[in-house]
Image (cartoon, rainbow, N blue to C red; front, side, top):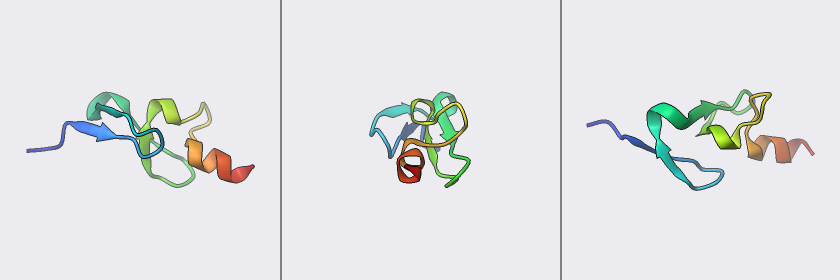
Length: 50
């Protein structure tokens, strides 16, 4: 059986896998849509660019 929940490694929240998963354009890891900015970068990648 497939896993139905997704745990975001940036914020730690659990989400339904189909509705909340987005991929970072820089590191290609999966995060929730809340942790991906409008340009498609995740919170950890944005912080490392500063």
